[in-house]
Image 1 (cartoon, rainbow, N blue to C red):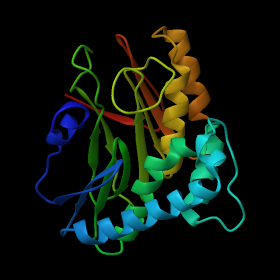
Image 2 (image 1 turned 135 degrees about the vertical axis):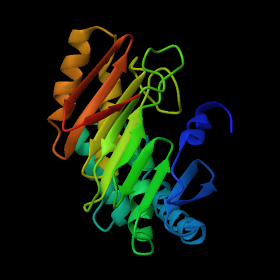
Image 3 (image 1 turned 90 degrees about the horizontal axis):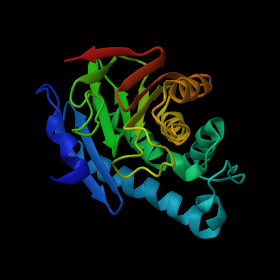
Length: 243
């Protein structure tokens, strides 16, 4: 793998079995105590279809960059995207990658004692031992390859997400090398990471501190982290694991 997917080579630990499922824009790395590729593919296909069908009927919902409620009777994943994104002040599609990771992960947790689903930096974790999420930033950063976030064992499951204004696939109006959020679910984490990244318009300490304070106050956010320039700052319940 090259480019933005290179970080997956950094996944370590031989206690879980890895599989990968790709359907168009979705690219899931799945880890569990058994090979979960077949049920993961079925779940991803089904949830993608639910979102796509809703977008066909409600195109404005998908194009909005501000919160939009889902219609009554919308699929559960669509309603969850709207709720998570609304809590963070962003459009529903800002939570799509996190929602797919979360809903697929929830299904797989019925089949495996531990499940990790990563979808382009948006993560569902339901683990029975401590895990460390590496904060991926560009090679020019003094923090490249040196900072991780400890995630304690569950239950409950945990959501995490990353956004970047300088790399990766994220749509961001900001300039953060990395904006990372750990939250009660991956929809909130995804929306909050987008909101956090959008607020980082410079690497000045005051800008980063204000952004962290605002996002840490979002209901469901456990903690958040920003790397900008030569500064790394954290708010909330996050334990760093350095190298």
